[in-house]
Image (cartoon, rainbow, N blue to C red):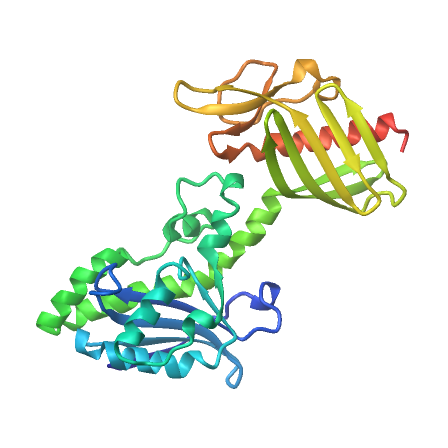
Length: 332
């Protein structure tokens, strides 16, 4: 077993996401996906060292599968010093794998009892708002403009590791370490995806010389109604509106809660893709709306959702139009 230590460039301020938490990013490399039969040969950790005031990246590497026990024992000694483990799909893969392999060697680990933040699960809960082909780590990175030099996948590294065990070729080992290093290094950077999501779900509506900030908190489909839950800030504190009209209604309370309900229809936007849409000809407030999706639709149609993805630009324009329309109607 060998431990490699690096001081890395400063990362974003993680207190934006984790207040008063001593966090550790974690990623493992294994010889396969079966935690019963396959081994962990590399564990990478990224954390802020408060003594040196630097970000540290630590890799615990087994030169052969017989070193797995020592890798796990070393991890067990280190991980106890943290409050929170941050991973990408680690709640399903990395942490149960570590636990199962530790139990094999009678290592007393509390890793499944620690607080965790699984970036993948958090993003998956928001995937309806994102125009992503998939939720692979590389896809998220590229959406944020991160293009890594590493050309290998975790699966590729399995073959590299077996070749390394047979030959001792340091070039193979370095390729494996580089892959794990990059996984960890950029894992901290992709925390920015949550600001990206927040921006997608936020609207600024100019009205009466002020700007009203709207944050979409949730969108639900209930039969033929799209129910949009929002939080409002910078609005007139006296706003207290319940507005009903053909095609939509609005409930805007003094507690800064805004709920908009839209009647919608379902159809097919292509021969293979289902959609939800509104016909703007039926709602006066929408007379100037345009469809901003990349689909070709009739002039009076505005898409709300295609398959399992919301057309967020359309939804945001709809909300802005409704807010201006209702406030004008209410003489506020």
